[in-house]
Amino acid sequence: MVHVPSLPARERLVLAELSGVAGRYGTGVDRDVDRDQAVTAVRAVTDDPVLLGIGAGTAMADPLGISGPTVQLLAAAGADMDVAAQHAAEVRARLERQGVRYDRPPP
Image (cartoon, rainbow, N blue to C red; front, side):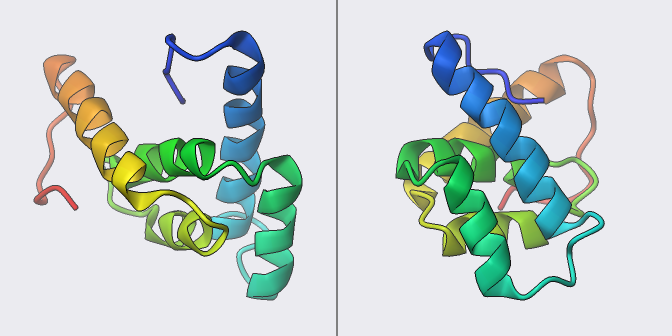
């Protein structure tokens, strides 16, 4: 779930679609597809480095630590990884306030 209430509704919808596409190609059913094809699919959703960075940050904050391939895909698609690190810290803090425990250090 991507939670960025400060963004306009249109950008939140793009993030929702991006989350699905990046997850499908990163760790889901299409994870074995050629990387160039996966990057093209992600960029068909958005090529905005900030939105890609927010998506990468959400994946970086995954408490199970299984979303590394999704982070790598979004980085390859042009994610702003400074935005990703900042968003990951925000998501991680929000999850920890809700009682989610991390057994690994932050990225």
